[in-house]
Length: 285
Image 1 (cartoon, rainbow, N blue to C red):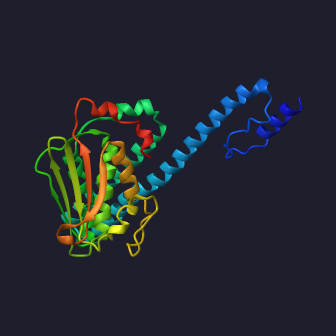
Image 2: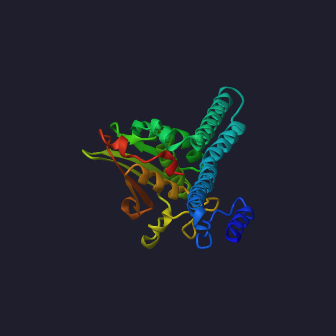
Image 3: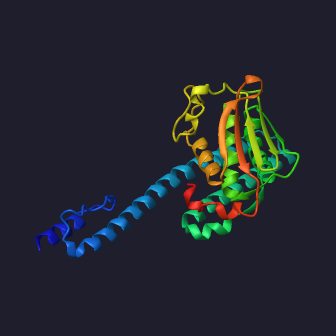
């Protein structure tokens, strides 16, 4: 019974974070199947904990932009003169609080949903409407930084996906472009549609990204040397995961006339099979 006692001792002395598989070499053959199943459970728990840590980091990043917008709106309300202008600023502030609360609620909901349940969140969406909402939400931040923000989306851009995820994608790209643009600069958001794809581009007039760095900006926590402080290096990593989730591709390139940076996202247009081909939402974050 000594091998059985050793196995019992190894399990009893494990900490809650020690989820590596139990070595089967010293396990009695009579319980090897049980320990093997226990190892499968430990691996599943390790994956779940890794997803939770990744989700926590991403959720914290997503809350950064709404909080920055709320601060800007509060500052505008303080500077506004008494009367209708201040009242309008306060209404914008309340609307911003509502949007931030809704984002927190949606993120918390996603942590409680099983992969099969998240499939019900998918549907046909108009990326133009999502882009309009993102531009309207981030307009105060652009105004506060002296950056002109424009949207060129002449026709509907229908894709299959999850609205929350695509909203995060668009907001991250626009927020990133605003933060890298100088005062007096411009950020252009464009949507174009062809027979098979929808293309979203976000162009800024910032310092640009050297060609050798353009692939690395999508790595988690990587920041281009000399980029503005305050970021965590997660925004573009989240964008890449969402784009991959929706079966698309994303890349960085030189901006118009070689100035600044253009982020280009290409997504497949919606069709009968695109909805079923999407993985579970839990695989995004």
